[in-house]
Amino acid sequence: MTNHAGPTSASLDESKRDNIDTYLKLSKLSDHKMFSLLAAPTSQYIKPNHVDWSVLGKIQTMATEQLKPTAFVIETEKVFKHSVIKTINVLVVVFQGVYSSAIDHASPYIEIEMKPGEDGRQVACMMLADGKIALTLSAIYSARAPYESGFSVLWVFDDAMCLTKYPVNDYLDERMDIAHAVACHIQILTQEEVKAWQEVAQAAEYIRIFDERFIQNNEIQSHAFAPTVPR
Image (cartoon, rainbow, N blue to C red):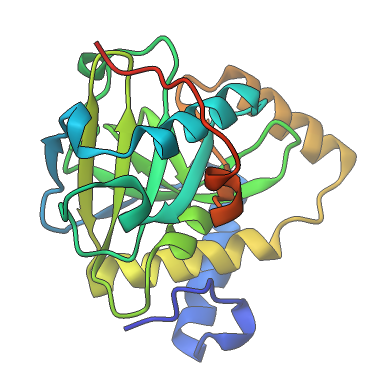
């Protein structure tokens, strides 16, 4: 099992260093894609009475305050009233003005890629929902315990809540490690490169979830919030 804290190039063996060199060259030439073969994600609709709305209401409020789409990392037992998953943490993503039918969050076609942020920096991410969502690997590493063979996301839409479990095998783990290390390597860019990547980011048609936030206990216990319950 790999180190889910997020590897650096110094921690990789020689074979992976060769892959990094190759990936670095490819990243300069094209939008390089690596398809991952793994078991299909599983998804279930979550009933409103199965979550703690005092907690989810706080997350919804935070989501409206964030300037960019954010993946919130929180302990699973803080969100759900019933044991629906066994993972220690869960990622919560709140979509505003989006219905569940608009995004195939349980699509089995998952890719590991590097995508540019609005500032031009390269972000290692997992492409979900048939390429419609780019989720930063940093959030996945944060939510996933070392012994867990996957991670879970609670997608909060206007009309429903869907809990999707994404399995991660050794092949995908390795690709995540490589992409993370490569992203760390290519942060020093010329002004021309930064401008070019910013233009690519502006033209992107996928949703970037490049920010993450940990939910602390004192944040969800401070005071009550009026939740927006999916209709």
